[in-house]
Image (tube, rainbow, N blue to C red; front, top):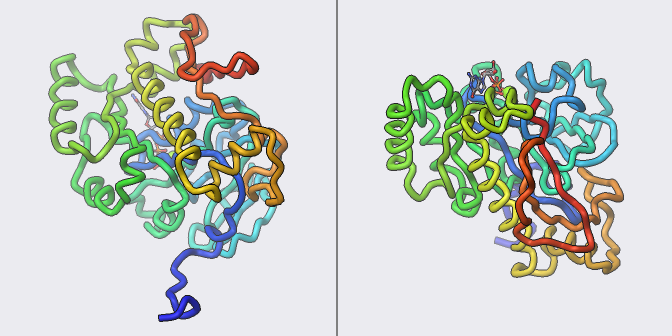
Length: 310
Ligand SMILES: Nc1nc2c(ncn2[C@@H]2O[C@H](COP(=O)(O)OP(=O)(O)OP(=O)(O)O)[C@@H](O)[C@H]2O)c(=O)[nH]1
Ligand SMILES: [Mg+2]
């Protein structure tokens, strides 16, 4: 079979995602598992309209920048869209909705908020076709009915390289009756998913969201170990660029950050000048908690971020 005869199963919109880029983390799980609440917790709710977090949409790809929202179709063609009218994006014809905002976490990675894996209103192709674009996944599963067969069978189809950069997050930790129950569920799910995720953790997204300056509630929510693991994975994904082939997107990003010039066009999903900023993961902290040293401190840059928890 010649190269020309090879099956072209990469959707056109994916082939158009070229150029330097940041790591991409997809938020996945069953319907109503907490994906959008997590996206909101990580990014901060201010720049995102209620529609983005409260309704069922095709994948919402959120990256750093100021470009207006667009609907990207399966060919990769972009159509400007009103944030108030995102519902008009037809799941069958939409690859993803692209939203940009200037929140610091988005200087480290793009976040793709996926529809639920067995949402009756969303054909599975809607999330299946964009999954190859992701470098890692945060899989949300409600602790009260954690890790169902339907979730396990989808996860089986995900490549090992993505799994190594993925977290299983048992949400609704606040709904567990006792500490003993929490430990029991965690133990069971960790045994069932052994080797399938970088880490399995329990969290209460609502407590983390509501913690604000309340360090105790933040600790209780289980958000801190999650943030640490998230930063570790982003660090890994960012570091990989130094080991991989020179034409990897991450390598291009590093070259730019080191001051090298590039002939490449800016990535279509992130055409802003901030593109070239060096990615230095720092420990995010709740407002009242003192920052600890960064894993890879860069004295020339004061780049840290503090997720919105209120
Ligand atoms: N008590 C509690 N409620 C939560 C938690 N996480 C999410 N919820 C609630 O669960 C509901 C669904 O959350 P979403 O974030 O919309 O879930 P989703 O996975 O994005 O749902 P779809 O996009 O419709 O598949 C919301 O009412 C959240 O407030 C949690 O940790 N604890
Ligand atoms: Mg959602």
